[in-house]
Amino acid sequence: MSNTKDVTSKLWEMANSLRGTMDANEYKNYILPFMFYRYLSEHQVEYLKENYLEDFYQVTDPEEKKEYLE
Image 1: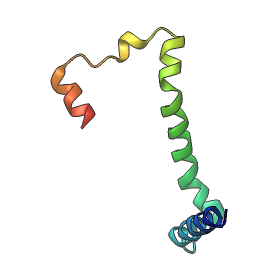
Image 2: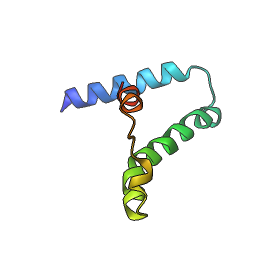
Image 3: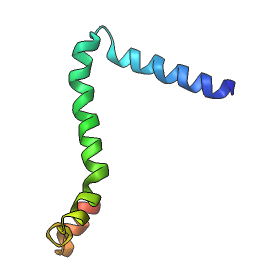
Image 4: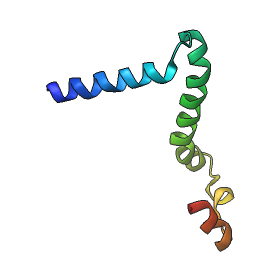
């Protein structure tokens, strides 16, 4: 259990170090867009299936698919 606390403590310390002297209100301007992008990324497949849009999102060109997967 102390290992979990140590890791959590270290992560918070690193986050505070990265944030530096930036005010929390200013920091949220950077974090909230990332959180929104993550939400969109996680729910994209579900949305496409629900709206029958899977075929429009298929990458059919082998070169484009190779580039996408890199």
